Length: 251
Image (cartoon, rainbow, N blue to C red; front, side, top):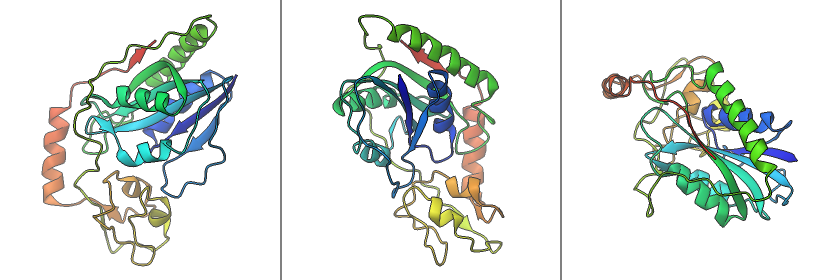
């Protein structure tokens, strides 16, 4: 069965989970929808293929820009696994929303997962997904593979509510650019929403979704969130979400 991992993943955590599951089901192709100008190598999927979707949780929902990107795809009764990644608070309605979206686009959800990843803000679940998490993803994938051998594929029971809660927007913290910037242009090229001016390398707060991709990728650490407001919030948030949470899988 041809397998493709399709994901929106600004900081790489959703990509890791989706790929771990997809590669355990067979050598998977990748379809990265993170950038707003992503050139898709394909948009249609056949009934005898398998797709593993991955996306982060934004305020308990799918990020609206990710939903727009997923709408470029079309399934044909294609079985799929839906996964969302969240930073230790809760995934709320996001996984249910992704499952509903997949069905709307012509895919058939056969399994789902809510995966823990390092939170964008603060120091929450640092280093996750780690080796243990990815091993759990692979074990889950083997269970998915066994399910796919069955004559009747039941839809997983996914927690969440309809109508969905409010959410799906970007955060309020918009990265700054320090004098250390060497104007390499990496941040502007990699920004999911094209929110960074390619000449001044300043962040447009009206477009920025506060994913901190630019902070994570800047080779000289010029992009930063070094403000008293953010430091205070990050410290509070880190304490609030200190307790470890585990991955949740649904077959």
